[in-house]
Image 1: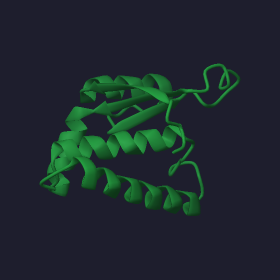
Image 2: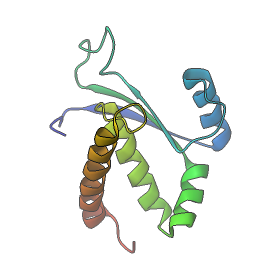
Image 3: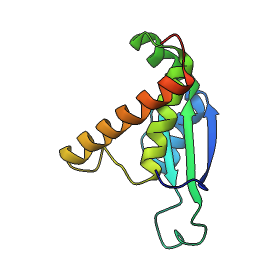
Image 4: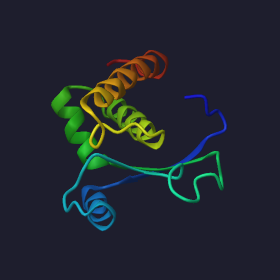
Amino acid sequence: MECPEGELSLLLVDDGQIQQINRDYLQRDWPTNVISFSMREGADASMHPHLLGDVVISTDTAARDAAEAAVSFESELYFLLLHGILHLFGYDHERGTEQQALEMEALEERLFNGIAAEFLTGD
């Protein structure tokens, strides 16, 4: 992603905590798997150019998603972290066009396959 000095925070929470975050910040009153808060947007985006933002992952939802997909919990966490990081870089499958969603999905797949080959075993 051409940001070797980039920093982000990662918060692992349960479904109750991510539902509260989703409700309070995004006005969506339900748990979700991952939420990203970019520091690269808005008026103060250039203040700390290496600060990417925050990624919040629900371990409860990740565990359910992993079981449904028959993949390891670790693999699902890596996938969700990657998904969240792509959001920090401005990729958006929800508010963008269908083409942008497909581009994000293709990039996500390519990057995840590299991560899986490097770090994951048994998936």
